[in-house]
Image (spheres, rainbow, N blue to C red):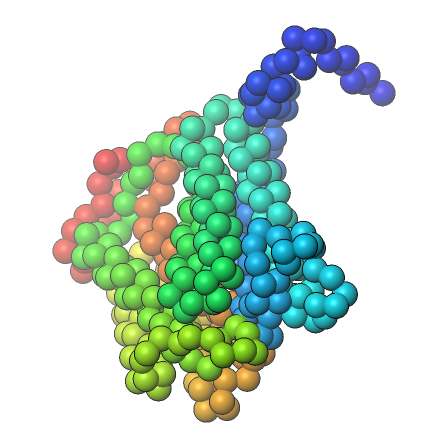
Length: 340
């Protein structure tokens, strides 16, 4: 068995001053390890969405009535606080698990050889979003679950999912200039779909803010909007996104596009259909908590699916293998060229 080298005083000083550089100098993770680290951060970001939804749907939003402590006298939930205190405090503790996952992604990215600055920056971006959202979560509690702060809290988590999904994708490709796989008209259609999906999610937060699940059993302020009207607007936007996704799949099929964009568009379409079924069922069954929770999970999966379609429109080689020959897509009105 190989002996672990003893740390000198200089090593100890270096480890304290720059622990990431210290680890990177002594450890080289495999590409698969880096990919798994990035995926773990993405998975935990989705888990936080689901558990945050559970806090609201169980009426436990003020289970810990203050922040950063759970109560004025206790850092943690007490037995006297019951079920709601345990749920809210448990969700707070999951933030540390999320931080660990993001930290693991940063360490793995920093230690990869050769060093990829862009990948490490994506990891740090997640860290600062998590820190900012933790503070925002505290503000949500301190202002008594004001619906506008709750909506901002969810939007910040969606931003975290965005960066995590991009990092996961970047761990599986090189750092050369992106080469488009489809023509300009298809790219523009996808960007329009991304914008529609983002608007769909934003309106979804308004539906939540105006709806009946306020997050606590006490009287909580709601957005002064008609919930059913906002829900119908949300449904119309959902149908727009579904229609754009189907149109994109049809066009990609017609122009014999590469398998990557085609398969990811198909996957997104299936997720959207499932999300639509859940949405309509929950609407006509008076919003049962379990279905609302599934719908929140579906929202995260839809957004990840949209991002995966967008990121599939180009490829980046590792710089060691020749690029794929350009293909022409006459039906899109443009052609694919070499690296831009």
